[in-house]
Image (cartoon, rainbow, N blue to C red; front, top):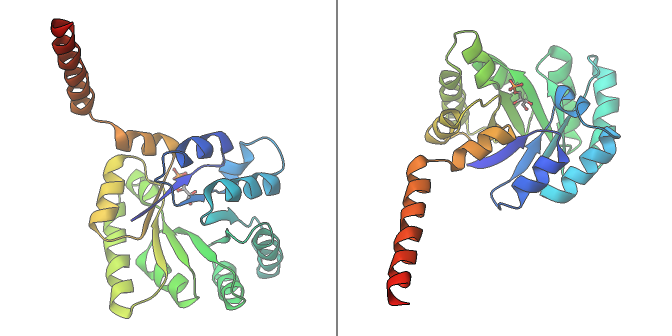
Length: 217
Ligand code: E4P
């Protein structure tokens, strides 16, 4: 399963990219709005760091505006993926942009029916938001199971990009269900590394090593 980071922070992306486990980046208007500087320059820098798919989202809500912004976002760098919302105009824009060979990520997906529409419109990625579903007492991971089943039935090439991951269990469950990608905030990627027994174990190995060498010396 591929691991993307969900952030617009160049500093965080640089730090995580150094770990060698980062496959791509997702951003959204809320995340990019937090970053200083021009968002196109920032996206270009991010592409240069990650050298993998980087999603940048349109803010237009009408078909023509989405096409215009989609072309602009795609022109920033060959790694750019145009993110469109799962609306009628968004699905129409997905079909048109995908038809031109532009990579599209259909975002704000909350049902399997919506995911099916994104796949039919030729999306490269569809982004179901598991955390936001959990927030409204609906099992987000159950949606991932449904989408993976449907895409497997028809061999849709659209990749299931599990978004709005809030904790490591979301990532593990996404992998168990066979999702293609999980995108997580930097904090969740950090949490994937952590286990107290790893820390205690390492501390004890080093203590024992030092003790043995202190005796010999
Ligand atoms: C996906 O691409 C979105 O940017 C993101 O995962 C939303 O996550 P949130 O629900 O934590 O804002």
